[in-house]
Image 1: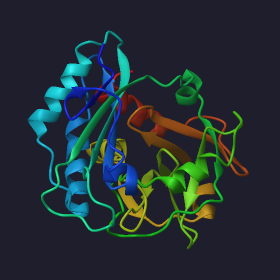
Image 2 (image 1 turned 30 degrees about the horizontal axis):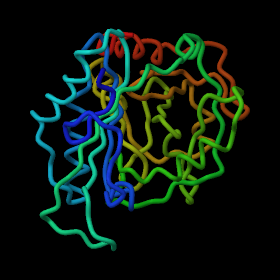
Image 3 (image 1 turned 30 degrees about the vertical axis):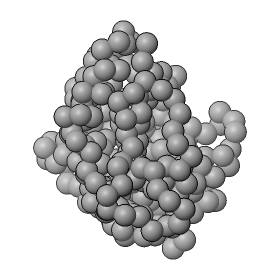
Length: 276
């Protein structure tokens, strides 16, 4: 049974000269497969293209990727599982300089669905602030490049079940996103989420939620967040392409005794697009 495809071949090793290994020179997408389908595939694809453009990596062939994805998916019987797609600049010589004629590497791997308790969606999660900060770089902002050491360090600041996610800030003190999620706040029936022009990852679920909210007549604003603004919100929730929406139950000294109406409504809309 195929678990990993590298450039279309069923194997699990890649050259030590690959620039994805040497320099983190590449991009990735973590995709939820639901009942044999990837509901947010087009959003993943568009973000991948944007990342390739920003990093000057040749575009992969969409039809070829879809064919390789299908090769893995058709053998799986699970209703829910995860595919990770990695595109690197491919093999290269030592040194940072790259040439335009390098052949990219394509890596697609299968992973079991995470064991997220239902109560995270139903009752909410407990969130902390991370000490590790996110750097600002407009050229890298929004895309899902392979350089994720900041998130790795931030996520390993706790090793208990006391917290389900950590929020990351810039050095200027703006809340940007979680280690694996985006954050939304509701205030006075308006939806707010941090702007990502300088830092952070523009999640495909974030994009979906913004579209669903606007279609429902909810005003949406992208702006810089401070800790105090986060803690004064009427509702808070996290999003990513796997778990959809997790309401925040506790952040610092702020506690929510029930899930807010806008959060719950958006959860229902998301579940229509991405059935659990």
